[in-house]
Length: 238
Length: 267
Image (cartoon, rainbow over all chains, first blue to last red; front, side, top):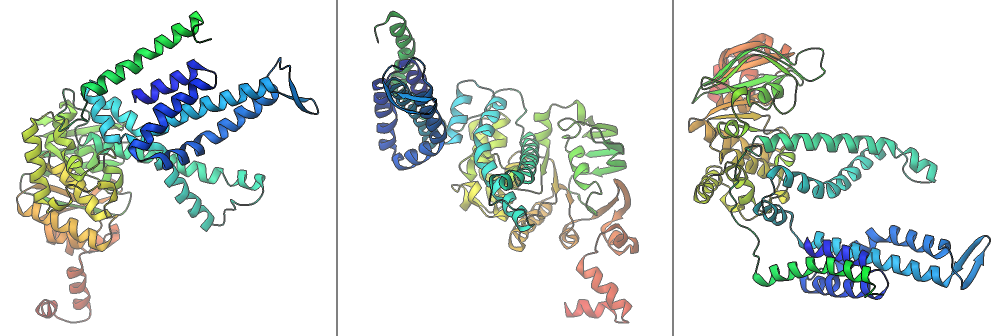
């Protein structure tokens, strides 16, 4: 979690092209290779980052103000070399942030995260909220596939023109949302029945190993953030 | 003893109460069946008896719900969970969703009680053994069949060692094999002297286990008595409840002029 957060922060703070690229290589790609999740990471991160990165590329490439070196012109839109540079930097930053968060998602089991947070004093109620949020996305995807199939079986047209697709959206969204809310309520009751609301210390059967080297690395990463801020303010990073 | 007296419960914003005039006593060693058509109030009664309604879902309750002489509403939730266990219909939404093994899933409740680590481990082993699912301990609960998942949920509740067990249609979402697994487990718990309230549509299962049966209609008790008396009551089918197969066959045999004892002789 520290690695993902710090990488995302550093990528934002560093700016430029080289910084985020090195960060992605050292703090995302190498750990992903070691963890054996590189292909999945690339697939998932590309899927998540693509819409955002493409939008950032287009907007920055064509609409960056004060660009002097004109590359080409389409009507009133002017593409400049300065715009291209800003666009590529933005895309690399997005790739670094998405890669870091995807690596976290792929390598940290939810159970371990919950146990570790509780070991550090976070309340079981708060960890339940966090774990529910993490679980929500895949659960909603599964449910929406089920609801779409069910509505198609009843004649709902979800293919074809954009207008048709939009019209088919509401009968899918409403049951998905209502079903998800009902499921959260049922799960909450089931957890209450298992004493989750009890005040006081919870017994932990195990917790993830945390070596001195890991702690040292974490602190180093955390300390790097104010250092980068200072370096940016003083102009040391250019 | 878990005792409900003249209980009326109304969901938040509802015009009419979901339960009215409910009086029920569940004593140690007693297995009580709860039957009725859908929406007759079986699940709501389980929620009220478990102390989950109105505490966690809102609404208003009248009458008294007492647990071993103490008003249920005055007890802290953690203490109630350790004394009254409840199992819901859908095992998928009853799992924590964050535990990666069946062992951890079952240990979740005792861990919440803050018991010593050794005690948590002992209770978890005991619950797994009681339901004969020790072999599943290392499996991922999210990747089990519905029946096995429900057994894991039941084990998670048993690990809390509740004095009273409320089962809200525990086999309704399971295939026949899964339902048989859970039914056999409940039968063993009942034989071991547990105090159990089972809401079920499957009266054959209840006929195996219950000494007393309550039939609900629109949130009110319509029939309440010894299991055999309720099963033989002609108005049971008007409540949307089919008597157990054995009783139905006997009724049909009698109507056809056949001595029901001959059916029993056939087996």
